[in-house]
Amino acid sequence: MDLISIIVPVYNVEQYLRDCIESIINQSYRNLQIILVDDGSLDDCPRICDEYACKDHRIEVIHKENGGLSDARNVGVDQACGKYISFVDSDDRIAEDMIESLYDRIVGVKADMSVCQRFLIGESGDIKDDDKALFEDYVVYGNKECVHDFMSSKGIDTVAWGKLYRTELFQDIRYPKGKYHEDVFITYRLVAKSNVIAVSGEKKYCYRIRNASITQSSFSSKHLDAVIGKCEIANFMEVNYPSELVYAQAGIVYAANQCVWRMGISHCFNKQYMNFLQSKYRSFETPFLRYGKNRFFSKIFSICAFISVNMVVKSISIIKN
Image (cartoon, rainbow, N blue to C red; front, side, top):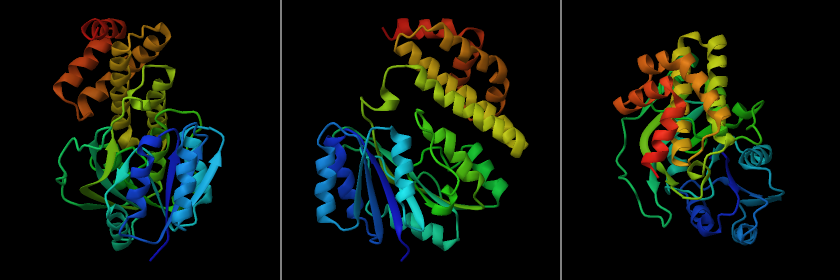
């Protein structure tokens, strides 16, 4: 069996860390290098990591100064010795056969990447949805086809976790330090280096919804990183895959919608942020309406924001007050 490196960035998640590590060490696929990157945690995480390293020889612990999620992932990638790499966030857990399932698929068709789906769990670990497969498994052959599947939001999503990658994909790619939504800046580049991707509709990754997580926090300029990342994708597609540009432009508006909504519920009325978002609606509203896989509410929302981001933010703030 090939060695697989599982990289777990760890920061102040003592409440969930044991659950996460247990789900990894109990994987049905046994030939693992488990890299726990303690990113300067201030709680009991460093001790928990060391405790498990003493129990399981497959676990390697790296203690470092806090540098953020991207930096922790990069340190793990640098340390990885496996033929394949997978990421698990330290407040999540994975199904017992997730790695085996991803490995069988990636080896079976000689893929560069294999992908599974997620199901949601609450802070206490309670399951928020069912475990039924979302769709039939399929394989994407051809570089352009891989990029199209990703851009058209079929079965390959942006998040780093829930995937198994050939380590060679990261040869010249690292996550951007200091960014929120760091996956937005990187996953499309990994897909663009792939010629075969195996996609499973099965839910194997357990994503925990936490009130204190990055995606649940109050609005700040860092949340605009998602829009900036989508703009980078659009620039890349325009040069390398012109037929995918409309999907990239639609993605910019989708990310802007999320920012406007969060600004409203956070009562954030920063004019600089709103002007930045307004410019994106004025530039990319048409691709979003024509090519995005959007529900009726999303389209109405974006049309209103096209008219006035300020109006939408204030309206949401009043409704959610």
